[in-house]
Amino acid sequence: MTAPRTLTRTREDLAEFLRMHREKIAPEEVGLPRGRRRRTPGLRREEVAALAGVGLTWYTWLEQGRDISVSATFLDNLSKALKLDAAERRHLFLLTHQRLPSELGKTWCSVPPLVQRLMDDLPTRPAYILNLRWDVLAWNSAANKLFNFSCHAPERRNMLWLLFTDPAMRQRLSPWETQVSQMLSSFRRDFARAAQDPTIDELVEELTKVSPEFKQLWKTQEVNAPCQGVRHLHLEELGEVAFEHTTLTVDEERHLRLVYYAVKEADPQVAAFTRWVSDDKGAR
Image 1 (cartoon, rainbow, N blue to C red):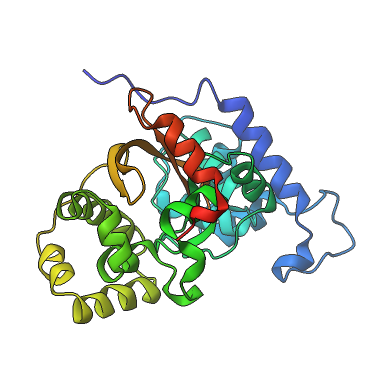
Image 2: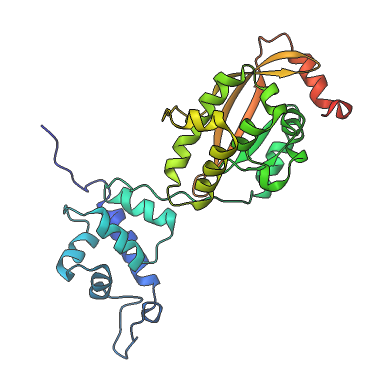
C-alpha cells in the first residue's frame, strides 16, 4: 500500500517561498494597476491565482501548504506568474513533491573563465569542455597535444565531426571501430535531449552525407550510459596508452561538461606520457 503524499516536511517552506516571491512582484510588472488602496506588498493572492489560471481558494490552500494535488502544468503556469528563474522553478517542484519535467536542451557556446582556469591547472591531464552538440568549446594544453583541437577551424571543432572525418583522430583511437560506436551511442542521448535544436539536426544530417560509417552506425539506435571507463589511445612516440576517462557536469543549466583523461596508474607509460605531454616540441 502506497503511503499518502503529504507536504508535512515542506509545508512551511512552501508557504514562505510562495509568499516571498508573490510580494516581490510589482503589479506593474504583470500589467496590473497598483491602485490607491493596495496594502499588500507585491501581488495579492487573487492576482496570482488569476495569472496562474486557478481559483483563489485553491491557490490560497497551496500557499498555506495544504495537502492538495498539483499538476506540472499548473506549477509551470505558477512559475511564469511569479517570474521564477530555472533554479527557483526547480525548487518549487521539489517543495510540492512533484517530478520536474525535463527541460529542452540548448546548445551553449561559451565557457566561464574559472572553468578554463581549472583545466589549465591540470597540465598533464587532458581535459576539454563539450556542449550538447559536442562542440569542443575549450581545452587545456594536454588535450590540445592529444587531440590537436586548435588546428581545426572553429566550425569544425566538434568531437563527433572529428571522430568520423579526421584521419588523425581515427588513428588516435585504438581500436577506432569499437570506441567510436560507444561514443556515438552516448551522443544519441544528447541528441534526444536537444530535440528542438536545429544545429544538432544539421550536424547529424551533414555527417550522414559525408560519412557512410556514421550513416550505418546512426541507424542502430544504440544508447549507452555517459562515456566513462578506459580508453586506449595510440601515440606515435609511445605506442598504445590506456587512459581512464570520465565526464563531469560543470554547468547543468547550460549542459556544459568537462571530459577528463588520466593515464591508468598501472600503465607502464605513465611517466613517459607526462614527459611527452609536457614537451611542446612533440606537438603534432
